[in-house]
Structures are given as C-alpha cells and as structure tokens.
Amino acid sequence: SILEMTALGLADSFGDSALLSLSIALHQPAESIALLVAFLKSGMSKDQIVKYLSVFSAMGPVGVALGMAVNEFAAPIVDAIMLATVAGTFIYVGATEVIPEEWEDQEHKWKKFIALMSGIVTIFAITQYTMTLESH
Image (cartoon, rainbow, N blue to C red; front, top):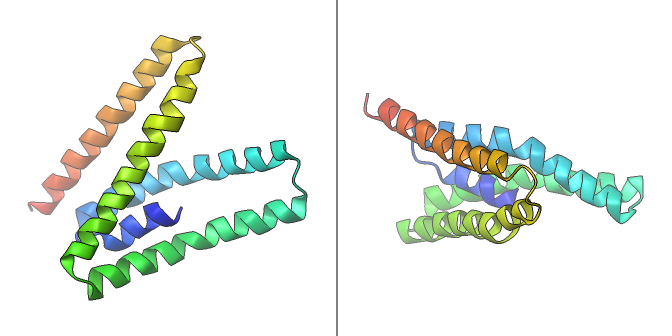
C-alpha cells in the first residue's frame, strides 16, 4: 500500500497521476479483501484484524506524503531510485507470487491467459491515452 501510494506522490504530471489513481482504485479493494481473507483464515481476532487493516489503510496517505516530499525536496536521482523500487517491487510480486499461484491449477487456463493479456492490453491502452492528454 505504501509503495503504490508513494508512486502517486512522485507523479509529475496530470497524466501520470490519473493513470496511477485509476490503477490504485482498481487494485486497492482487491488487495484489501485479500488481506482480510488471509487474516480471517489465520484465525486472528476481530480486534487484531481491525488494528492491522487500519494500519494498512493509514499507509496510503503516508506513502503519498513521502512521495510528494521526495519529489519536491530531493535530488532527481532519489526520485528515480524510488520509482524504480516501486516498479521493481510490483514486477517481482507479480512474477514470483501472483502469476505462478494462479497457474498452479490448470483449470480454466485459457480464461486466465485471456484475463492476463486483457490486463496488459488495458494498462497499455490507458497509458497511451494519458500520454495523449499530456500532449494537448
């Protein structure tokens, strides 16, 4: 949560902010539900779950503030390093955890493949669209 929101704070343009906001809006609910399900499966008490989900939710504004501070006050190399860290973390998690876990079960493999490709094409299309907004 803090990493994706840090990327939003680092955004330099309206197009970047719009793309990241849309990505976060689509991703955050699923991430929160997955976290809730993991907590429920672990047998945690309701009070513990509320506490941990509250901390998780609070990390969003902290990440945006951190990204904005770096963007405003730090050298451009620090900005670049933070963006690389955020992007690398997302690629790592997707490549080593999410995609392999989904492909363990071969049931509906073509539906999963189509969903993966649809996601890639959608992000590409959104990126291209936001780039056209910046050129106007």
